[in-house]
Image (tube, rainbow, N blue to C red):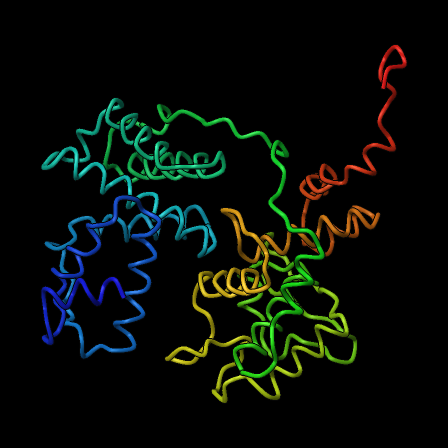
Length: 364
């Protein structure tokens, strides 16, 4: 809606030129809403290409395109990064270049100095709200600078001047919901429309298996074993396949979705978007929006973090409170290290109280 109003004042009924899009994106001060707007505009171009003047990209329009393509190839062939990880690091490289071109217009990368690198790092850290995002930002810059040195674009390895940000494992408490709130949100979803039926199946599968957003989007129809009551999860974050149990209620919701609501299109994937063009979810945002929408409609008060991972954290916390063995919870979540799962023990206050040592001197 906001872009439609913006474009109407500049293009009217005429096709929208790239300059209008660039002007609109420049109105965003921070990166997060700008990235969301870019994704939404990309979808709009695919759905209604006649409303846009598609310009052919050129090296003059994006002089860093060849360098970023080389960087992407380096991440794939030399570093061996998975596609999702590669996209994040590539975005970090793009952001560093954007900052450099803006603040040092006309300067070649070969003349990049340590002082400029530190200024770029300070800029990125100022935009990062959490310790994990700060760690990722500095790591991405460090990787890009190592690439510049490796590829011969700079005579020094400036990655060594990028400071490391403190990030202590298990130092935080995971965002989570009370299990009654999760149950309340699921029960509040109706079964009258195809969207309702799909969304209920999505929330039940996330809440009862703890699978990640990307894992849910990758599930295919053939991955469900109805006889054994299991779902095969492909190529997880730990690069391992695993199997998660399919509870009776979740299986019934999936069957209802497949038989009554799933769009009749030729796609092997289980969950499909109802927005044109019909097909599998191409990114994490639609699934996160489904979770947020249904939790809000269920009367659940949400904080800053509210997506598929919130249900994953909530399930893990509930299982620990039910005194399920920690290795069993780790296997369900697909954790390679049990230390990762140990984070959820911190929220089991009643169990921790049972093993607490008495206060010295006998005082409670």
